[in-house]
Amino acid sequence: MKRNRPIILGIVGDSAAGKTTITGGLRKLLGHENVTEICTDDYHKYDRKERSIHKITALHPDCNYLDIMELQLERLHYGQPILKPVYDHDDGTLTRPEYVTPREYVIIEGLLGYYTPPMRNFYDIKVYLAPPEDLRMVWKIKRDCSKRGYTEDQVRDEMVKREPDSEAFIRPQRKFADIIIEFYPKPGVDLKDAGPNLNVRLILRPTIPHPDISYLADNKDAHEAGIRFKLGRDSGMPVDILEIDGDVTPEHARELEKRIWDHLPELEPINPDQFGKFMDAGKERHSDPLAITQLLLTYHLLREYEGNTVPFAPPVAAMSRLKGPGK
Image (cartoon, rainbow, N blue to C red; front, side):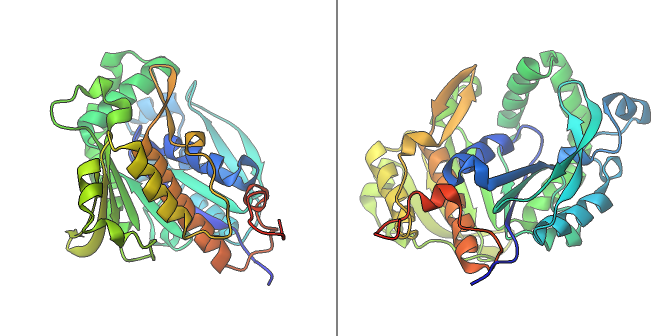
């Protein structure tokens, strides 16, 4: 069976919502050599100085070449190379474009990935990241102060300036997602120290099929251990909701991971300490809720890969874990 295109995953969320962290784990699970990563920030019309002159934020559609994004998303969807613009976050400049040939999996992450109907047509899976705003502010201050040379006051002022555009253009894209990911702290926890103890709520919409984890619905032991699965509604739509506490017991986290891996019988599971990682105060840490989230997204990518016809050989990293004598 011949295949004719890569699988495209969209990850949309506001600045510092965790897009890069999610993507990093997916690259580890799928194999770096099998993933092409595109950041839609590269399609800014104006550099940092020009945005200041024009009094426009990077979140505003008029500050981005959305038409070029649409055209290049279409090319990637059909497995064709693109000449992608490049935005340098370190100094806020637009630099030399990059020639990109899509691999088996293409991850498109950024601010405005679902803004227009043509863009939304070219994704196989659409994810939206929706942490609470006070948590996102903590993440943004940590990132922009340590990596981009801002002061805390500058970051806070910039978030205030951006809020109208966040409300008008970024958060409305949530309604187009197949999966909504909400990391959040337990009540009373200091946000600066929440790190590996963050809970996660995964809203699984019926727009794509999800793995069967209904065993959790009436599993008292799982509930007490920090994993809950229930039916609910989101924006009036019936959805499945999976909640995982930051202090979930390792035993129950491994059991849920095993249930997801069981939906991928052709693959050997990899050690859970190889994903679910994030940086906190310059140190690499592990989160079971993050690991399960990344594994669930990997399930969707592999399921789409197996169900599609694309002209690529099976992923090297995946082939290396194939079971049986055909390995």
